[in-house]
Structure formats: structure tokens, C-alpha cells
Length: 381
Image 1 (cartoon, rainbow, N blue to C red):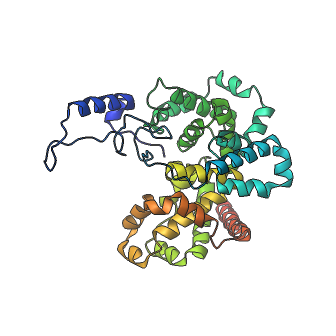
Image 2 (image 1 turned 60 degrees about the vertical axis):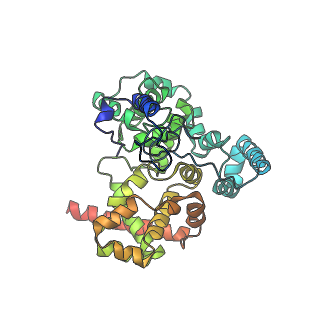
Image 3 (image 1 turned 180 degrees about the horizontal axis):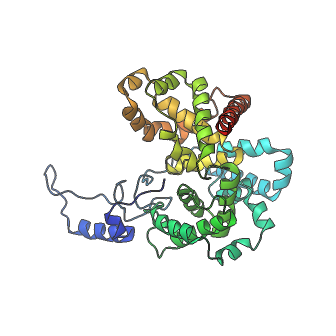
């Protein structure tokens, strides 16, 4: 489930790759106008190689690198006004959560200002409550040895998470060390779950926005509340939610549902990364931040809605479905959704306009629970 490095990256760190690329580019000649000179590398625009300058989110390259300027949809004055509202809300958090949750949800859907996002996530996730309850526990967990097998698994994975991001470029960067600490501490905190590869990108994502100790408690909340039972052996909860996604898809996009049924496209083949990694390895970065603003406020149903929009939009066209005349072609579309369908504007507009109610989620959830119990009873006979 984790990002797999190429064979060469096991011996050459991303930082060394960047230095080599810079050295190569300095010796390359720019082709004359209209000529066919040697290839040149655009170090600040390529998304496949490494750039000499990170993008606004700290990426030097990779699939989530972007050199496109941010499209400001609100004025500077509006941003400042939203920041003030969020700071006031955080200062009176308990009151808002108990009496005015709808206002929090409304403001999350509009997008949390980047300047207050880390603090907002810390409160939205319930991490602040956990941290206050166990103020010294994180440091105490770090002093413990942990399960040797799990420690080795974490060490194998820690360099694979967002390897082109400035925090995780190489082992001497603080990001990899903090990622190891957060994952190790959680495996000791919740030994029933221990460690799952899909947790690593979530922990790395949180470390990009929060100090290590706050990121740890936010990670605990995500794993134990938002994605509860997702990482336990057997992944039963993921299988149940896969069936639930299929049931909801039948309601929101019946033609897409029939296409997937016809070609026997099991939901686990395309939605495992989406749900286990909470979209951290699927969406463009700006879109991901907005989705997480809502996810930490409204829970797993946001991931369901994002998945349903991607499914419905990617295969909505009869022409596209006709071209996807088998399982492989369909999966290719779903694993690399068209860029326009995962843009902020498209996704945020459509996830709250799906033909779904809270009751639809409850009914489908209860249906899958009943089927699960029947299957469990049949096994016990």
C-alpha cells in the first residue's frame, strides 16, 4: 500500500538524484530555435523529475508536484475575515461543538484558511482532547522499544512516503525521523492494530502540517475513530465498506454500477487506496487539503462521497464506458481519474450535491451489518 521506490532509489537518495539532475542540466546545451538538439530538462516545471525549487507545498517533484499558481477565489479581505472567525471559533471550541456544529461544518466546507488549518485540524479531529488527557504519553511511548518485527517494517517503509517532499527527501531530514517515531508510538499505543503500510502516508501527511506530538494524536484519532477497524488483520471493515460503496453507487450512478457489475470490477480493486490512505495518495494536493477539512469535520462519509463522485464522473459517458470493454480498461480509468474530475472546483461542488441523504448511509450501513452477521453465523454452524 506504500509508495514503492524504484530499484535505483534504494541506492541513491532523492537528494542525490536532485543533485545529479542539476549537474546534468548545467552541462546540457539549449537547442537552437527549430533545431533538434539534445533533450533539456525543465527543472521547475516537470512533474516526473525533480525541480530545483519546491512548489508551494514543499514538493520537488512527483505526481503531486505543481508549479501552477493558486487560483484565488476569495479576496485577501475575505481570507482575513475567515481567519478571524476560525480563531474565535477555536477559542470557544466546546461551545461551538456542543451548540453550533452546523456553523463549523459550513466553514469547513468553504475551506479552512491555510494559516489556521493546522490548529483547526488539531481541534476538529479531537487530537487536542487526547493530548490534554495524556500530556506526557507520546514521549513515554518513544522511550519504549516496541515490537521488533513492527519496527523493522516501519523502517522499510519510512523512506517511501512522499520521497520528493522537502521533509522526506532523505534520512537526515527530520520528516523521516518523526514519521518513524509517530508510527512506532502508535504501534505501542494500540498493539491490537500495530502497524499497517497504509497508515504511513496518513502519518506523513499530518506531519507536513502539525508538530510531531500533535500529529501523533491526530493520527491516533484518524486511525481509531475515523478509520476505525480499517487496519486490523483481515481488513473486514474495508470489505464491508466496499460493499456499502457499491450499494450507494447503485443509487447515485446506476449506469456506472451496471458497467462495473457487467465486467466484474470488485470495489476492492480500485477503492482500497482511496479509503485506507484517506485519499492522501489519490488527489491533487490542493483538493486533498479541502477534502480533509471536511473529512475531519464530517467523518468517513466524505471519503465515500469523493469516491462516488470520482466513479460517477469518470465513467458517466456512454462513450467512455464503451471504450472500457473490460476489467483492465475500467481500472485504468479509475486508478488515474481525469484531472478535471479531481480538481477542487469540480469535486467540492459535486460531493455536496449527490443524491444521498443521511438515511441512505444508515440504511446501507445497516444492510451490510446484517449481511456480515449472517455470514459470520453461517461460518460458525
